[in-house]
Length: 141
Image (tube, rainbow, N blue to C red):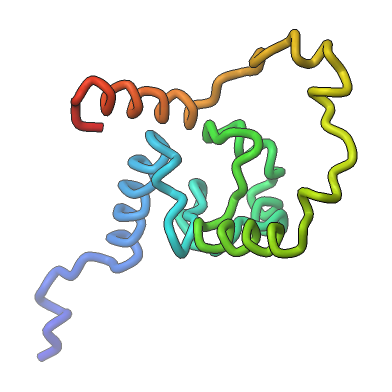
């Protein structure tokens, strides 16, 4: 007799879907956790990548800017894992990219300096500030 005929086995896809939804709920509350050492997790489909490409985001009908705004990432946050970001930063230093910058807008245009930090504060920034305050107060982040 076939064991599957009398034992109720939950669908693998249903179990996987439940696990992905639980993971996504956790990551959407704190999107910083989606960026890991070797992977970044897409907050829409829970797929893991080294870098969230425009091609993948287009499949969700989003741009990188829309994705960052939707999930509360800073505008300048690279949508890549930490290891890849570190590799690119080391390569930029090695190639002397900072030496090629000819103009610094904040120095060349004093009006920008007067604006100060006037910009929208993202969820990522709020969470980071909260964790820093808790750590300074001796609490657990």
